[in-house]
Amino acid sequence: MNKPQVIAKVVDNDLCTGCGVCTYSCSSNALTMTWNEEGFLVPELTGDCDNDSSCISVCPFNPKPIEQVKNETAIADIFLSNGTETYEKLGRLIGAYAAYSNEFRQKSSSGGMATYILDQLLEKGIVDHVFSVRSSTETGTHYEYRISSSKADLRDSSKTKYYPVTLATVLPELDRLDGKVAIVGVACFVKAIRLAQYQDPYLKEKIPFVAGIICGGVKSKFFTEYLASKADVDWDNIKSPNYRIKDTSSSASDYSFGCIDTSQSVEKRIKMREVGDMWGTGLFKANACDFCEDVVTELADISLGDAWLEPYSRDGHGTSVIITRSPLAESIIQEGIAKSALNVEAITSDTMRESQQGSYNHRHEGLYVRLKEAKIKRIPIAPKRYGQRPVTPDVFLVQILRRMARKKSLKIWLKNPSALYFDKKIKQILLNLKLATRVTQYRRGAIKRLKGLLK
Image: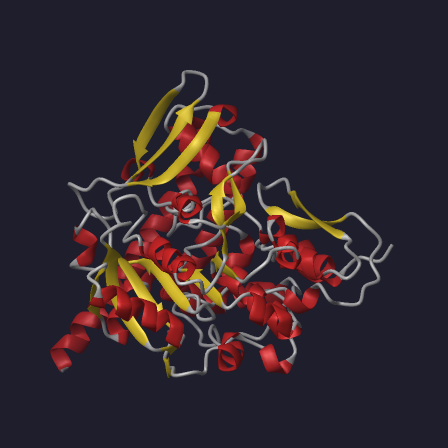
């Protein structure tokens, strides 16, 4: 039995984020998404494969893409050239905004803009169904991609879920559903959809709108188990994990994690500030995310994320940053403003970049270190637009420590799923990373102050 290229070149090199588009595109129907030992969804060979490369052609981490779709810039030129201009690090866009929905803000992770956009697509008849992440109907998992065909269904898909999901649960329905479909996904999932549309023009007509969620990295299911353990809930008693419980009397970043403890039938919560930095450290993150350079979902019709900058971050109700990349997306925003359904403020490209500066530092600047590592280990990586410029020694050290923290976090939890044990074993690495990060922050701050004086 031949091993499909998507497994040989991607999964075996720990470069899969579980989008599952390969399972849909596999002409042999030989791939099935399964959980690996580190708590991620990956394709597994479960049938006879004719090895015709159909699966690797839609993989966002294909190490040898064809020239026409070699990177996000090339793909955007194909799908998003209508009415857009290209901005450094932001990709093609029409407008950039900070906004919230008057109707959906309160029950969403930030400004409720994703729910609003999808709601409008259904109401206007632009699409008949939405593929989004909702509560799972399957035993042993909390969330999954499901089909929403009404506004009521959409309510269940509001709020960000930091839990592994795969499009493989819904993509087979594309050929059976009447009408058109919108898909919501993080950058790598969106890229996979665009690659599938490039391979099969039918999918471009079937999927007229793709909404992108700006992502800090795909987390293992261990992340959910760790947070629950911190809230004094055993991993096998977790129900309805809620990752973004707002405190409207505080700042946007002052949110809680909560879940139902089925052993006591009560909800337990913990403030995320008590847990520590789960994003800047890379804990429980997929390895492939460290080789993604798309910070703001450059290939979506609209990109949505959190406004992690002043003055918006002071508002605990939540505010979204938005990039419109197609005339349809822009028209939905403008109509929302006209009928007072949205509170919108235009922001500059500099402000938009600033809202995601930490991610740019890691994904673009720090990529240099990870590409060096991959070269030493002889792991093939697709040509990148960033990461070619050597970094300073302090940045190099931060990146090495983040890689160590990411890898060790998964090994520790696999050995003993206890937050108390985990915190003890990961403590020294996180302390070293914290000190190294402070040096880098001090250096960057000093350079910024010096530039200010020289203006």
